[in-house]
Structure formats: structure tokens, C-alpha cells
Image (cartoon, rainbow, N blue to C red; front, top):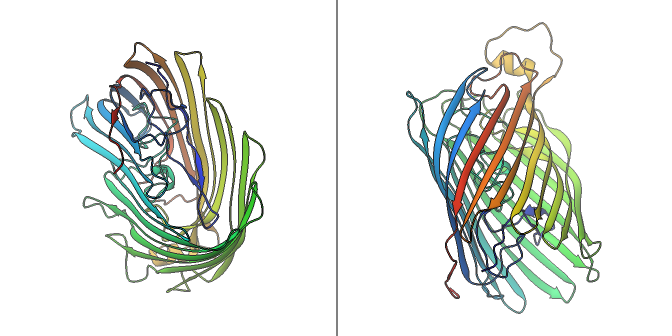
Length: 447
């Protein structure tokens, strides 16, 4: 049996012209005659089991060292059907602390997508759910050290509801339910609509977290010029509603309206590019705290794929829910991922991101809300600079076993001296070493 490793993420262009991360076989899974950078539409269930040891330095404070044993698993499946495409990825595990005072924790990340295609219509519904003990960063699961760097679901947990500003708040639930439809009105023109509901909810009794729910709807006109070029014009409306111990009567609900023009081009067999840009209007139920504003929303990505080597660069800008820390935020994010096999036995994968998150609420207004007297009324905003990255080296041991070592680093800083206590401050490092067992894949046929 030919042993190959899934090492990277694919990008998928949605019907409304926005770029999203695609699905891939979890790292460490043995496949048969399948390109390592894609989940083959083969009706086969791919899965693996891993055991690892993880050491974290500085995550819970400067000089703090924690160690854990992790038992984890990954599952991936994609149906062969072109009229009823279905895909699923799952990553989950149990984290067993090696020191007293910390309890056993679990994590789960699940993405499911079901489509239906007729002659003139395309329907799709998807759901992404995560239950995580910490802010997600690298890998399929978002948990550093467990051995799944280089695999990203739709969307990656680091960019979903639970991602953004890194916190140490403990268990959190993130869920995003999406639906879309597209109607072909000519061989090269279509109209489409989409809706989504996203929620971030922190568990426990801490007073630091800010839960929120986001509801969005969009409509788009899509034009395909030729085999390599297409474009879209999209109108999007979103609302953000806040709750939880930290939310109060003065915390505003937020509305955004935007119009985006996007363009996609296949440059060659190895390169493709996509980009979108447009104005974004922001308003809130408390204009004194979050005044109305006009921002620029956009995204861009560049993808390289050649045989078993893949690389991608991405950029996004727009308003989001604030990661449970801020009542609304404007973020600029830069992302990268790459993977390359060396011979039949080695695979190296890297991924990372940098995000600058600025609160929509000015610091003087926030201080006034909290009863803090300041000497300035200048509308300076609370800003978080977040950077993280990971590298993983994996080696085949035998037909069904492989071993890996990975390293992940996180760093976060803020301009606000009275920032929330649950926010990660400073630098954290994670080292992980483990072994994976990938049984022979199981054919499920067509659902």
C-alpha cells in the first residue's frame, strides 16, 4: 500500500465569490493512490488515531510550565456524487494533565457539508461546530501540539467564531450554520443567495467573557467570463447580538452593511488568485459607545499547488464579533500555510497567522462606561496584535504508523493597560511529540 500524508489545505471559491479554506485529509492518514493535498472524492472514510505528549511554556502566565498527554483522532470523508456532494471532517481528543490542580479536558471540531445540484440550481448547507478548552490556532483541531498542522477544515477554527483575540477563558462553544442557493440564468451568469448564523458561547461562571450571536444574509450576481476568469458583486447584511456575564444594558448590538466586488482568476496549472473589496457601513444601538463608521472590507488569496507541494497566502479585513473580548472589532488578518513531502518517508508542514484587532469602541468611551476617569477624549481604540505559527515534521515508521514532532509559538500584546484578565498576554510556546496509527481506509460507498 502506498503511504501518503495529507499536508495542506485547499482553498474553495464560494458561489458569492469569497475565499474560504477547503478540506483535506487529516495529517498522518494513510491513503491509497490519492494525492496528499486533497481529500479524494472516493467514498472512502479516512481516519487515524494519535497519542502525544505536549509541553506548554507561558500559556497560563510568564514562567508557567504545563505538560499533558493527549489521545486524539481525525476522520475525513467525501462522497463521489457530483449531484449530492457530501463531506465531513472531525478532530477530537482527550487532554490528560500531568500535574495536579488541572482537570481532564476534551476538544471536538466537526465540519459537515451537504450539497444538491440540479440543471439550473445549486443548494448547499453546512455546519461547523467546535468545543475547545482554549483559543484555536494551528491545525485541523486548533489545538497546538496534537499533530494535525497542515490540515484546515471549512472554516479553520482559528478563523471561525472561536478564533481571533487569544484568551485563556477555558471551555467555549463555537458554531456556524450556513446555507446557500444559486440559480443559473445563462451559461455564464448566475444569481445566488446565502445566510448564516454564528454563535460563540463561553462556559463557566467567569465574568470576563462576552458571548455573541451573528446573523448574516447576502445576495450576489456572478459572471463567468471564460474558463479562467470570473467575478461577482455581493451585498451583505449582518447583525451582532451580545449576552453573557460581561454584557450590560450599555453594550450595543451592531449592524453592518457592505457591497463587495470580487474577482477570481486561474493563473496557471499551479497558481490561482482571488480578491474582493468594498465599503462596509457600521452602526450600533448605542451611538455614543460605537459611533457609525465607514470602513473598507476585503480579502485576497494566492494558492500554489504542484504535485504534492502546496502553499497559500491569504488576507482578510472586516468587522467581527470581537472574540468574546470586545463588543465588536475590525480585524486585519494575514494567513499562510505550506506543505512539502521529502521522499516517501518525510513530510514538513507549516502554518500561521498575524491579526491586528481594533475595538469598535474608543478607549475614553470604554473607560467612562467602566467608571474610569481619563485625561483625554481622543478616540483611541483598544488594539490587540496577535501572531502565531507552527511547524510539524512527520516521518513514516511503517505501513500504518508514523511519528511526528511539532512546535507552535503564540504572541499577543495590547495597547490597553486595563485589558481583560482572560486575554493571553506575552509569548507562549508549545512542543509536541507523538505517534499516529492509520488503519486501512474503509469504503462507505455513496450516501
